[in-house]
Amino acid sequence: MACKAEHDVPLGDYRTWVKYVEKGAFPDVRRFFTVLRCNHCEAAPCVEICPTTALYRRDDGIVDFDRDACIGCKACMQACPYDALYIHPDRGTAEKCNFCSHRIEIGLEPPCATVCPAEAILVGDLDDPSTRVAQIVATKKVDVRKPEKGTMPKVFYVDSEPRALVPGASSPAGGYLWADRGPGAGETSEEVARPDGNGAPVGGGSARPAARTPEPPAAWLGSDLPPPAFAQAMHAEDYPDAEFFRGVWAGLAPARTTYDVAHARPWGWKVSGYLWTKSIAAGALLAAALAPWLGLPGDRAFALGLPLVGLAFLALTTALLVVDLKRPERFLSILWRPNWNSWLARGAFVLVAFGGLGTAWLLASWAAPASGWLVWLRWPLVAAAIAGAGYSGYLFAQAKGRDFWQSPLLPLHFVVQAAVAGLAVVALFLVAVGGAADDPGGKAAGLVSGLMVASLALHLAIVLFGEVGVAHATRDAQRAARALRKGRLRSWFLAAIGTGAAAAILALAAVAAGATPSALAAGGLAALTALWIWEHAWLRAGQCVPLS
Image (cartoon, rainbow, N blue to C red; front, side):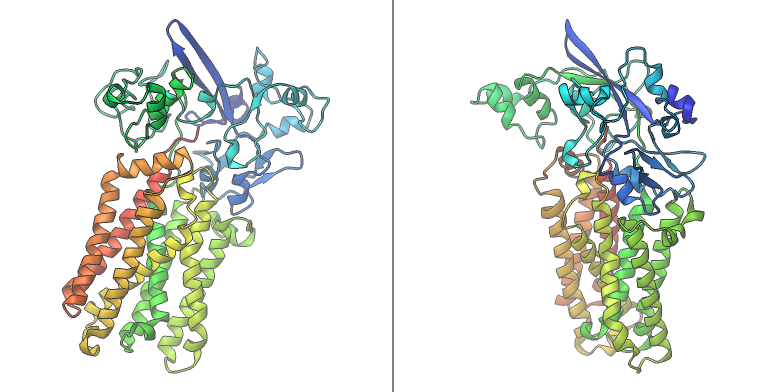
């Protein structure tokens, strides 16, 4: 409350909050209170990803923000592993705990520390060994949140409870002490709702009883293994409460969250739409540059149509990016005050170069198609198209809060998706403009269909064996993948895989039938549909795991 009063934090948003976790079973029960906030990391991922240097680390170690520079892209919310940032509903800018730097500068402590009657919050200079906080950190057992992220956080918890610090380590209750559990608090709507586990979120339909200790699975009783060994062998794929039972046999008492706050999902359909339109833009211009190797007809319908489609979808990509900002009028500040460590800023310059080369290619194709300009522009345009498709993989890798997006295959996967989209556009062009008439024997259509089958096969292989079906290194990534395979995103996942497979089959049918126009067109449409479904499901899965 002191924090809200000091900074005019709106209701429903939080610079700091207290999470309650109950541990044990009656009559031996304890409740743990954990203050959560910005960790003022030494290697702050929010500072790295911010495209306009609106977030920065001061010389005294405080991670502060400049609301006049923020464009409201929400990338910092994805990069922070601690759920520390929110978008101010009136200002449209990202805000968080800034350690009350305006008070620190004049020798005062933050109000959260001054109002605490039990001195549960202590502040000080960790670099000065004479300060109380430095001595406590040096002499007592302290923990930090998510040390595996490598952020080097500067908020330390004395004699902490692991079940309170680790998101998802305690079972979310059906209801909280003084409130119903809203969407996004503790467990997200993407995961499977279990009848004896988590209660329905507010507005979730039927009411459920409060959380109870999970019942052991039937296989528990029929196993030849002793219960502790069986508990260790349980897989989360088959037993949603596997971690609970492993914890019990490791000596950890049952725990449940009885009070927490909700955090919104920062990115929605506009970002998944941006990934889709960018794939089409990159693919169409890539196809235009490589038209001689695809055997495409040399008429103006192809020479001008493919770059026009690419530039139109690039313009739509830019529009989606701008509309998704909370302060869209500040979009151009990415260009005149860029943070060169951010792939959002780098990507903006990549898209500008890509758009410039695409426009030059279109003008050269229209004004002087027989001149040597296309020869000089061809390979720079190919490089720009690949960069425009693949840079998003590095951008999502900077979203360190989302483990599911950390796949090293992501840049390659985005390039493969651009290839699928470009070939799908070419297939539609071959049917729409009657390219088959200038294609004796259907050689171009056959080549395009064959390449579409190969690129779709590679896309599906990366999805199944590189992102969803792979053994993920972290629990959060495993939970996101499980939401796709067995959770509420299962229908989206199956639709993406099924539509992609159908596109490949239709493309194969087009090859077998001598480039049948109907099969070719249907295959192209199915491929584009499969890409959009996958982008949307993948984006939602990455955000379905709570960070705090």
